[in-house]
Amino acid sequence: MSFEATLDFARRADAADLLRDFRQRFEMPRAPDGTELLYFGGHSLGPLPRAARAAVNDELDDWARLAVLGHEGARRPWIPYHENVTAGLQHLTGARASEVIAMNSLTVNIHMMLASFYRPEGTRTKVLIEAGAFSSDRHAVASQIAWHGLDPDRELLELAPEPGEHLIAQSAIERLLETSGSEIALVLWPGVQFRTGQAFDIGRITRAAHRAGCLVGFDLAHSIGNTPLQLHDDDVDFAVWCSYKYLNSGPGAIGGAFIHERHVNTRPRLAGWWGHEIATRFAMKPGFRAEAGAAGWAVSNPPVLATAPLIASLDLFQEARIERLRAKSVRLTGYLEFLLDRLAPDVQIISPRDPAARGCQLSFRIPAPGRGAKVFAWLCAHGVACDWREPDVIRAAPVPLYNSFEDVFRFAERLGEALRVLA
Image (cartoon, rainbow, N blue to C red; front, side, top):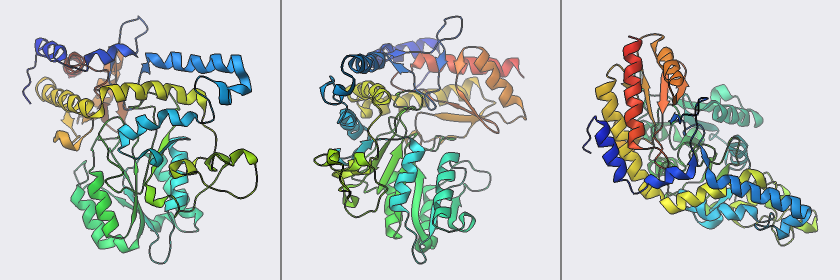
């Protein structure tokens, strides 16, 4: 990729961008004085798709007009409401329609999947995760291990980067599975690591886990809507995600899950009435008969008002297409990397330098003690929205649906200014 450290180059790149008009379909966050922020926080919360407001208002209007009759008579009837997002989730996960379901929140879905897929038996009792995993994932796994009467300190394997490194090599995961796989019941791994933005080869990890006789699931909170996925063809056992980051469906929005079709009739589960087959669900009789596919893991009816924004957002993804978004993402992060190397040489990028090995996030450190926090505060005070992770990491995500090359240039420019001011 060929770049120039000039505003003129950034504007020419934007003029040539076939996806540039999607930005106009979002409400971009603004500062108190009304000026638009440089928004690089989509890895934490995506901005509002403008169509989401109308989608929610449609449901409010139908609720007012129909009340209980909306379950069957709303413009989008509420009983099969989750089906409105199936095609969009298929597109982003590389799944079959029967393998995806929008339900619950991310950590609830982790618990639901661990109840089905973590079945310690004999010598296979351990769970492999990354050291420094997102805290909610670790809490869920540790509590599930304890739920089975086992000791998390013994049964939780946490693979860390080599000393002095920030990234975990794929080969290190494979070596651990080769040497300790006979003790591991389940691998739970991120698609993209939240702190560094490292993107893992899901198919390669799945094959290594299966060779060792382990089941494997993925937390795709930072992957879905960020990197292309092919969960069915990669033979992943299960996956879970939230939808308020790259999927732009609002704070606390509904999450989702993938369950490979080969597990539909073979795994135990925690059941609820919405996972019961639709043909007899409302007969309210004892005896659970699972709905076909991943829908059989649902426990409650979908929250309509929390799902409506996801419908609006997934429509944008299907129109833009994840392959085109990924191609733009590689150029955006490549341009940001290029500019940081030239305009902010004091920073240490800890995300992978290989564009294929990262998502649309660049994480970096400013090594001098305390200086990083001051730089972050300066950026926040000067119209930049990004993210701070203790002890010293700034995360910035140029998201291809709504960020531009000019955004990237101006971010790097302001970071360079912050470093000069705070030298």
